[in-house]
Image 1: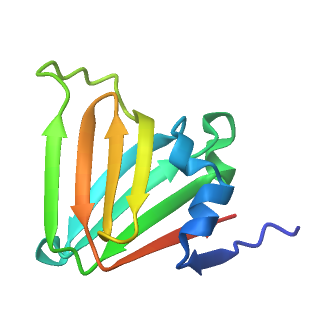
Image 2: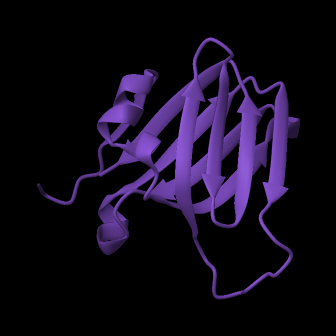
Length: 118
């Protein structure tokens, strides 16, 4: 083990499904809108009990459209992470939808990468 960090980038939705991210029950730590909105990075944790070892990023590249709707008007500063209720990838439409308890993101993109550090 030796404390080394291994980073992988995977371009296939099968890996997203292997981590069961499509079922929800993971957390969004933050969302970054980069390169004038053409790149969206969703920072997540798929096991909050082992947050340091289960962090990942979903990187949406060549984005053409982003819709971001909040789920309510009440902001609570204690909400540091959003619970993912559903995550759908529509490959043919090149669109992904992340639905959380705090917001919903609909991203139209050309490429989706999963980046894991462990």
